[in-house]
Image (cartoon, rainbow, N blue to C red; front, side, top):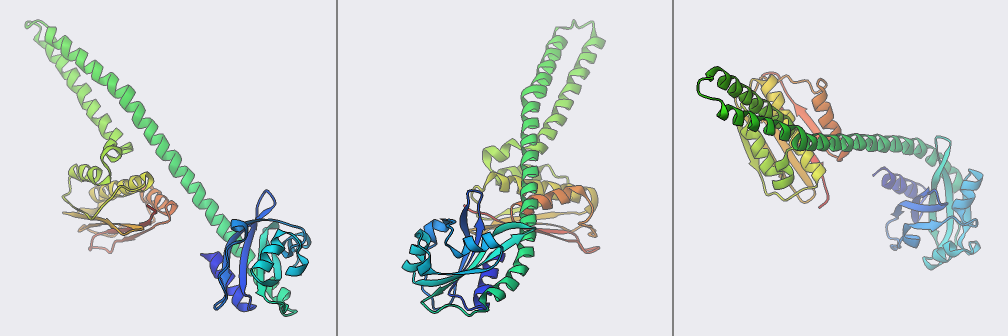
Length: 350
């Protein structure tokens, strides 16, 4: 994590015993984003559970107030923050404001054990380092906002799919079934001498049945009911069974995963099979799904013509967004004449 690396780098640079990166919260408290401990220094617990009041006599409060680095001796801090410093044998604190795009984001603070104060140039050296950190935090926040935006888009799309699938199942499909049954009943009541009318009713009923079948296929593409009822392996087996291209499906030891993850994997496989059918001219597709304690791995390989361009196609772009929202990686390898391989790794917590 970038914050961990930054705290370690600063702590090593100015030989601090502990280095923290602290974010100023809306309620005027400070929360510790990360704490770095120098080698051979005793471990300490985060003060106040990692969120502490921004008292006026602290180094961080002075740094935020003046927009400049500030230092404080622990004995001069009379609030409960000072009590914590003294309890952990911290004698001096130097804090530097972290300003992100003209906004006071928080502070970096270096803590020193013992009574000897840090060197006089500590503030200057900290300020130069934190200037570099400011732009890094801005980039990290922008990336986090982008990921959050993608997550909202994916969640909204999934909710829309579920609503459409429910409306199709509860509304249109039931109506079509009712009409088809009425037509079959009318066909059965037609006298034998009206063969042409009986044939027309039969053809119309069959047409409704065909429309219903197509609608069910569309509905399954939106949100397969089997995925919710029986889990990902069963849904994938049903999916590959409908593929015109032969598919070899291998699923390792498996347990139920979070819904977002199962839906993502299902759509990855579905999109990959669609691409194989449209473009690959393959004779076989091999799909492997497995995982570890904290990662799931998916590979989809075909023996087609290759030459796929990952930069083209909104389907693959949407799948990349899904994978990145979950913190995963997706790699497409498609040399000309050697088939296409899709490799996905997604971390998860049980």
